[in-house]
Length: 343
Image 1 (tube, helix red, strand yellow):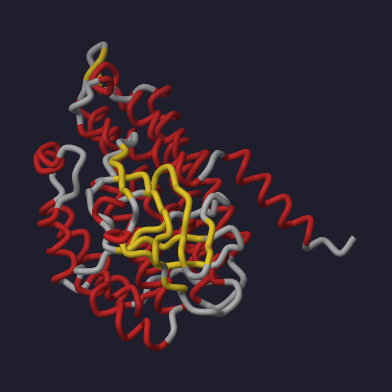
Image 2: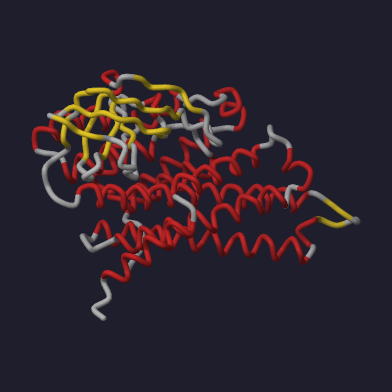
């Protein structure tokens, strides 16, 4: 395995880091409240970053999302790339790719996903019914990718949904409750394994986002403890602080390397299901440890809801919830391994 980014992946990551660094400032994020940053989204799309994922693959997307996570930028990049661009490019028909990909590249079409499947959506004669309690970035989306009870994938225009009810999450992801009642849907392709592939890709992508969130939280903690003094010397010189920071660094690296491995396997056409579950488990379990550490190392400042590190805490906990608790992921991974055991 070679996780060394290509020149194209490096260039895209560096461009993303500059745009996020310039526009996803604490002041702009605070002003956005719980909504998304439309100006930032336009800047990312004008730079061609969502469309570049077609060439740079899932690993390229993970690198982009790391940069987003460092700043907790409020744009639907992960959702629209993994549920839109990659899903349509890999599983859409030729006609669907020709019709949908141009809008996804320039950001005028935004897709989110009601994954994983909950078994609540039914299909009858091409019409969908049921409800999904919360879907990330739904209020920003033009389309939502919905799995039915048989794990077929359907693209639904949000304007055709019976209702979209605003839902406030731990993190400001413009989420909503999706209600379908005889809603028209478009089947995404007809090939087998689409649901499993998209779910695995989503787990890897959001694990990459968590790696960035954790890296950003830890960077803030390192900066703070290097200048904040206690008993006449910086907090960073205390062994207990160093050990907490070291553990958080190792957890962050574990999230990153497992996400890279899963993305690499996916891009190489190898089975990435187990690797994706492993990355999701690390992102869920280790992710919440890291953001708790980042907040804890800020002492009383970490309890300030307006402090930038608190945003990382909220995102880390939301990603933990979205990816699924560690015991659920381990149970799914265990079932998968057991099925592959010839004994």
